[in-house]
Length: 107
Image (tube, rainbow, N blue to C red; front, side, top):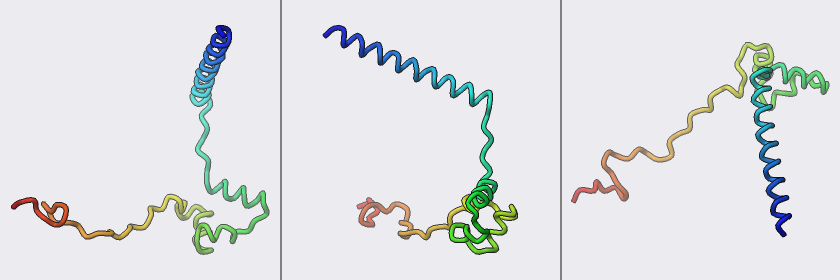
């Protein structure tokens, strides 16, 4: 019985040491060899070329043919960077001092 508890603690200790080592290696690799941010347009073009796709294939995701051309030619920002359209307010603003039920709280 005693041996099983000790073995479990040794395994847990080794797992913790391995986790710390992996964290240190990851941090050192990120410092020594930083990865550049991927270029989304280059990714789209490479994907299209590798799969034999046409310029029209991204239209459902990006928009019209003209917009696809603008994005792929880097004349328009990435559509994912476009801010979302404003949403209309669902409820009118309540007046100052109104509480639940429309009462001002003053009797």
